[in-house]
Length: 75
Image (tube, rainbow, N blue to C red; front, side):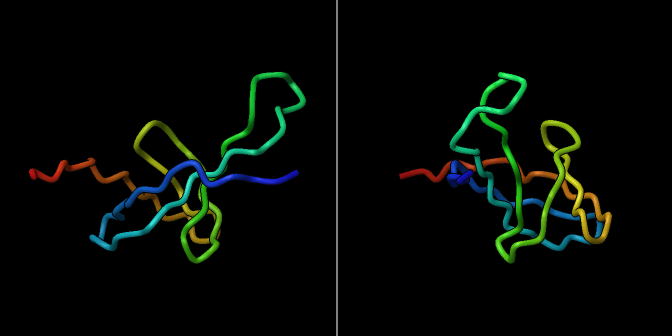
């Protein structure tokens, strides 16, 4: 089963550290038929669990991180 990178974003912990999070989607549908599974990992490879739309938890340390809002760049 292969995973494809479908997105990335930055998230911040309570102490202000910024983490680069990568979003992956499995190339095959899940066993329950709900569509491809989505997983999250830090750029350095640590696993991340999604808590809700903008909140995530680092599996290894239990640290909660919050997705940074997307800012648009004026041209």
